[in-house]
Length: 249
Image (cartoon, rainbow, N blue to C red; front, side, top):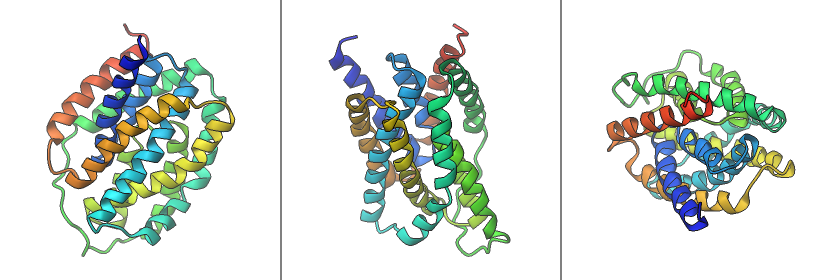
């Protein structure tokens, strides 16, 4: 495939993925299989995707801040609990067999389909509802951090469920915290992939430009428009890519 076409595909995939990641989650279910489809092995694709995630979440944080949504102190405190799990997860990811990782990824993406097609409850502000056991969020963050460091795909859904239902905060603030948390734990994860030679910086930067573009606008719109269409597009893409990874066709 000519490089200009590869770059265009990656940029457009990144735009859609960045938008989806900030709106809800699951954008890496597009970018990670696409990188594999373009010829990268699983670990290299996994590491390269982290370059885009770092830039994407910086863009989203700046956009949220521009819209007067930022609680950096609280976000950073939550992010710290994801670091141990994320580091262990990233180390596991660079050591795992390539074919085994592809099978795990394919199974995970099929599971994500069910979370996408399930009807979502009405998004409402819950700022005035007191959480019964807010402390439980901390062990949850350690576990989610491991998953994010290892595979990343769909981690946004996990953060949204944990933060929304445990801390009882509005969905907009959930997304605000989510992008900050993912940025913090992705930095050491990216470092682990990089020192193990599992990053393609050129492709990662191209993807990152797309992710950052999508993330900026998603933070502006914040789940208000286009959700139904995005769900349909994401389901189709996940089915095709997961079937390919599982060698169903």
